Every structure is written in C-alpha cells, then in structure tokens.
Image 1 (cartoon, rainbow, N blue to C red):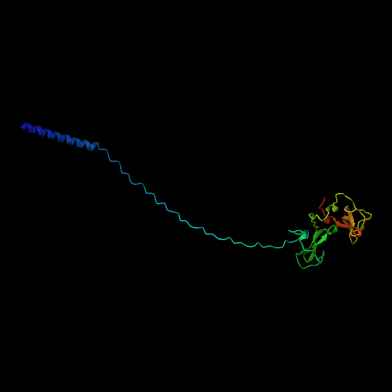
Image 2: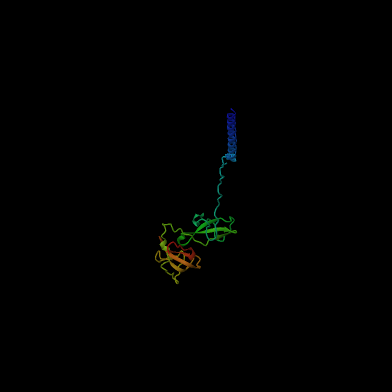
Length: 212
C-alpha cells in the first residue's frame, strides 16, 4: 500500500515537472506580437472650387469723325482734281478769304484736263498738275501722242487758238505763242472743226500722257 502511494506521488510529481517545463518552453518560444500599425494620415477632404459667371458687357461704339481732305498747290491731296467743284470767279493770284477751299478749272489741249485753284494765305494758288482722265474712252488720246517726234515750225510758229492747216492728230513740240503772244515751251495740235482747223496748245506740264 505504501509502495502504491509512492508510485502515485512520483507520478504526480513527474507530471508537475513536465507541466512546469512545458509552461517555460511555451513562454520562451512564443512569437512576439507584430508591431501594431497605426492609421495612415487621413487625406484632407478635397474642396470644390467656387464657380461663377464671368461678367459680360457690350463694347462701346462710336462713329469715326470725317473731314474733307485738304488740297495743295500741286494737286488735290487724297482725291482727284476732277472731284472738286468747278471754279466760278476764282483766278490765279486773286485775293480770297475762304482759306483752304479749292476748285477746278480746265487745262491742257482742248481743255480736256483739270487744274486746281486753292485759297492759300489770302491768295488763289494754281496747282502745277494738269490732271487727265485717261479712262475716258470718248476722247481719242492717240491724237496727243508725241511719239512721232514732230517739231513745230520755227518760222510759222503755232499760235494758240489761231487758224491752222496741219494734219489732225499730228501734234508738234517746241515753241508756241499763247493768246497774249508770249513764247511758251510745249506742244500744239491742229484741231479740225466746222470753221476749219485751230491750234490747241499747252505747256509740257499740261500735256496728256495717256498714250506714249
């Protein structure tokens, strides 16, 4: 009986030692808990950008100012001489009061051209340019072509508006006499009419160049 008690006690003691050893082994072999991970920094809420309607307006408008183009002694500024009103009493060198105003008067052979007369500094100043409308097909501009190079007679010098017997449309160049019998450098053409031919003359600066 005593032996059985010892055997049981030894068994119990052995089991206790085994249990203790297991407890120690479990404590040392346990895998450490993984480090805790915190929440990542929270991203801020994305705000919605404010919107609005761009202000609009009507651009202001206005009428551009206009004026009459000025004229000069040598021409007509921005417009052709033909667009000017016809002169009435205006004459070269006469006094005037309408400063800057201009008109036109005829010039050139058969008065087919236009020249300006402008009030400048209290006097009428005549333009140096005799303007011709070469697009006017009612005029035979070939009658004024100097390409033939015919020289005017130096003995029977042509006199402006005087009778002539030369061929029509055959102008000559050189010297002629104006109505006051003053010698002028220029050209003349014998223009035929109902009462016969008459010289039509003009200075070199007032001769048409519509046809070479």
